[in-house]
Length: 162
Image (cartoon, rainbow, N blue to C red; front, side, top):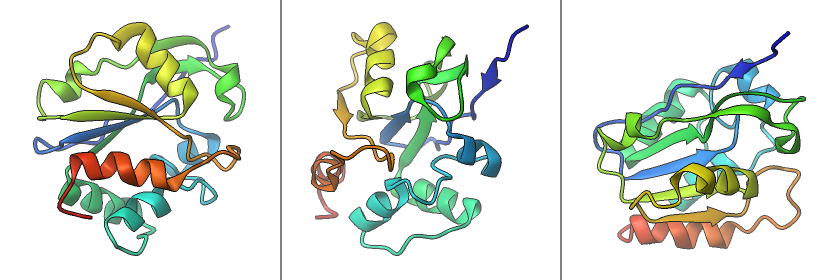
């Protein structure tokens, strides 16, 4: 019996210049039906903070923010079996078809949120032709999280913000 769980559709606009890829939605994200739904995850605080804004809590407000800042979100794993939220338990995964975003939006850079996202991305897309970088995971489980690394990478895409 298969326990394949499907992730979310990508969030992007035809103006998205940056694609941030996570690994797979956490249990809390799946409950709220949008990316980085765990309030303990540092993602939204980091991203809103980079742009000098207070975090907006609602999904629609987050979507408006992302669209206005030309940021796309998705996960490298489109579907998989997973125990809870642990990337280490991802198995029987299906990789996301990045052409769904890259054929529409002028993405200039891809940031991969954590080691699992980076490793899975590299298995299929290492020669993609769009610059990409592994970022420290924003997960509350990551003791080596470094917001400065994220802000430096974001400043490469959005230099006028800093």
